[in-house]
Amino acid sequence: MELSAEQRAVRDVVREFAEEEIRPVAREADEHQSFPEDVWDGLADLDLTGLTVPEEYGGYDADRLTYSVVNEQVAYGTLSVATALSVHCLATSCIATFGSEDQKERWLPEMADGRPVGAFALSEAEAGSNPAEMTTEARREGDEYVINGDKQWITNGERSGVVILFAKTDRDDPNSITQFLVPKDAAEVSSASGRTQSGDTDGLEVGKKEDKLGLRASDTTSLTFDDVRIPAENRLTEEGKGLSAALSILTGGRIGIASQSVGLAQSALDEAKAYAGEREQFGKPIGDIQTIRHKLADMATQVRASRLLTRDAAAREDRGESVRMGASMAKYFASEAAMDVTNEAVQIHGGYGYVTEGDVERLYRDAKITTIYEGTSEIQKTVIAREMLD
Image (cartoon, rainbow, N blue to C red; front, side):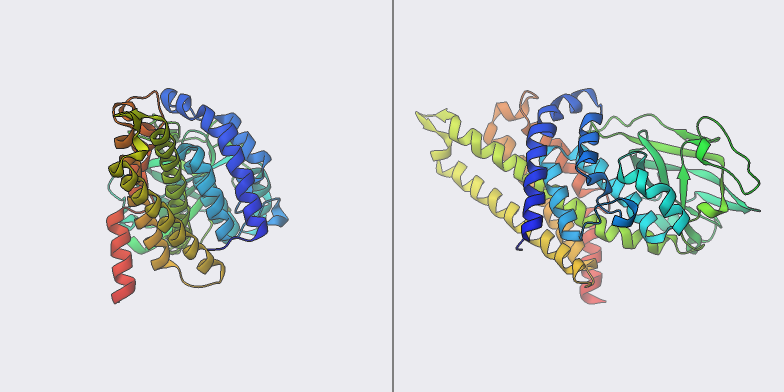
């Protein structure tokens, strides 16, 4: 898929930022499970935290192909930062697509500048692949909604200042899922009667950071809502329209995850290629050994195929075509390829690939999540088959 001159320029700028600002801190951030906030500020300076924000609200207003290119290059630096950016963009997309004019004017300019950070609260412990089973409830009381429930696996759960929340207005009705905007700072929460709070939003508790296999620099927490009150005007969709809204946003999000998988796999391929040229065994570089050359050939082919599938889906969305199947194909293929490529990168490095002094073991650990979040590989295959046959 051919990029325009502007898209190539964006790619080159973000790749340079990834190489100079993200990759040097990626290992330490992973080791200490600490998000590199200086990197986030750098992304904001490049206008990337406003990637999906319309220009009239101070954003970049990127098309989907540019969005894909940016995600790929940030993930080349580290998946932890790319995931945080992707989720922030999901939140801004929800506000831009479904919010009122007042909500857009209030939140989008600041979020385009990088603060507050956005979170996307859909998953629950018993409602991952099937969000219709969620139990979080938003009960209408006059001019307010009262929210009760627990959300899990929330990226930016600790760092975020705005949560896009999905809850049922009738806990027993799977068709009542509705989308809400919940500020975490209670100073931003006021009812129609003028009631305000100070400090954190009453009843909203952020759980401990999950100790994860990979993606360790990205904060993942639970969010507990215990009689959290928000004004009714913080509802983003009509009651019962939240699930279709979530699925429409996540279709584009899957292109983002596919793009991140490509960037991660490219990083692993580059590491393996460089090591194969430097490491000597039997009196010659291991890159001269046919077995290693075949591994690199397979890896390069998977990366290229993943990139083409992903950019094709992005370009189709930009043309206004349905990409439900294309996005799932890209996400499924690219995430599985990322697992294969990072696995082979570790194998090529041998014992050095298994220790934490290098980068490939981190890339290998990070790759696994791409086959899980925003729809597992099994869910993607279900979507693909349904679109083909039904």
